[in-house]
Length: 104
Image (cartoon, rainbow, N blue to C red; front, side, top):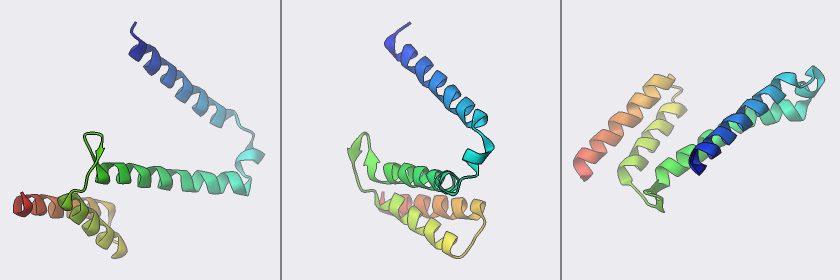
């Protein structure tokens, strides 16, 4: 096995151990206000980080793409209007596609 496969196996084992630790945690630890608040905010932070990376990088370098920015703006407007999630995705995709057609 190459080093890459060893790394993949190690990450898989680490993810499994983390999930097992979460399942084995005592109920009073999980009910603690700090832990529950952390569990609520981590997915939001991870999603924001993923959006930021996808928005402002291309081929590993910092880049600014006007079409992606327009799509993100459309998604933000749809979210502010409390549109359903699929409508938010469709609006972002449609605006991005139209911007790519007109901006090249």
